[in-house]
Amino acid sequence: MVHIWYSEATDITGRALQEALHIDGGRDKPRNIGANDIVIGWGVKNKADVNLLAGTVLNHPNAIKKNRNKFTALEIMKGNRDLAGNIAAFCKADQIKAKLRGDMSYPIIGRTNYHQGGKGFWLCVCSGQLEAAIAEGAQYFQSYMDIKDEYRLHVFDGKVIYAVKKIENATEAGWVQQRKEKIADYVQKNNVQLDAATIDYVLKKLYEEQQLPDRIVRSNHRGWKFSSVAPANLLAALTNAAIKSVSAIGLDFGAVDCCIDMKNHPWIIEINSGPGLQGTTLEKYIAAFRAKIDALQRPARPEVAPVVKRQPARRKAVGAANAAEAAQVDNVLNVGNDQLQLLMNAVNTPEEARKVLDIAMGRA
Image (cartoon, rainbow, N blue to C red; front, side, top):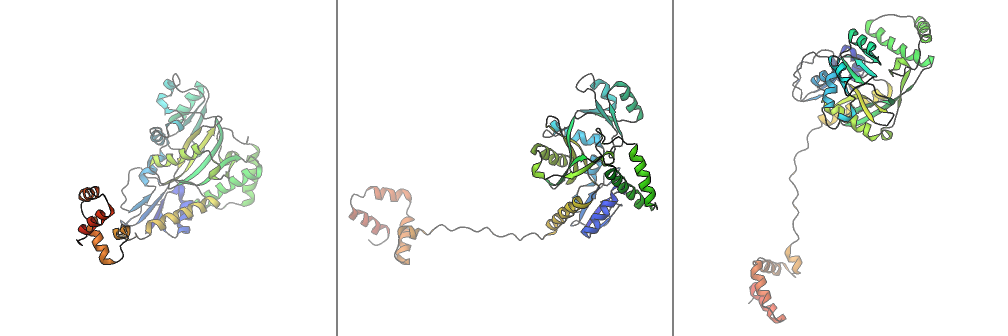
């Protein structure tokens, strides 16, 4: 059996994967899981560690739990020597003032330990903004990254299966369409009926109040959209850091938000363990899961005894004319090397050599 376990926040994509892969799934912890079964964790939200008896778990809920706490995830990645240089300096809120007198400086970003999208975000360029951020709930701070290009790399089983770059999408049509998709999600989850014309009217009015694109938070509802990029065209250091970040957390797959700064240095921002998927991205994950499930369920090949190469028969090296003579030659060559060498060293003429061979072959 294959089961996908998702949360309320990730159930739209979770259900889409469940239906496409023709597997079991749901929001609750799967029960009656056998030792040969497969469980896929898709953005699961569990407060305590869980024990699953499945033979294989892809994105174990306990690894997802660590990743959901973004401060904990940063600590884990910073502690990995291969990733330490790709994580911007950060500290807890109660340490930031001391850090600002040391190895951190303005501007800094305030975040909550658990956040999604642009929520729980404070840009601080002075002490007044810092105090306000702490009062409003910022739990940790991180150095501001001077972003040149921002990406989302979808890593699966140690490879980048799809890559997108954030590009400006400040047009009214683009902004309205993205907000409509978000509203559609809310409507579907809560069984709310909304008039399409009313939605269009309200969104167009709201667009007029926006200052887009937002240069600080590059999210889809702040004037940005994803555009596909060939993984081969990515900076190798960025790709490697993204793959290592997923592995460091203990995940099997994840959407890695990352960027290149103005000096082309790669930085890891965070990992999403249950990203919303549509179109090509959804298709890439479906194909990756199918291949992985097939590989896991494929019967193990029976062990085959290793083929032992026989050494060329020594009779061929001597050039024996028939099997009987070849056997005699084997007897000659079975004489100890030291003995044979002594005999041959004593030979002075071809006639003496023939006599030595006759004796050794039992013909004398």
